[in-house]
Image (tube, rainbow, N blue to C red):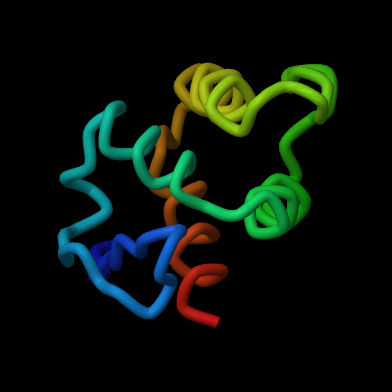
Length: 94
């Protein structure tokens, strides 16, 4: 599935940095997307994506550490980043 993916700033969520295609996002792009989310958005992403808690560090860790662990889990899955990024795009756009 191809869709436009909007990268938003955590400091100013209405400011669009750039638009790209989810299937073209690299590992570093995906990390950049996740670490720019608010804590509430990140928790929503983990919940909606149904990421197993045993793959994630405690919530007292930084969002960057949590994002890295989430991406390491996602990389092990056959479908790769795209399903995670679809959920992310849905969360950011609402």
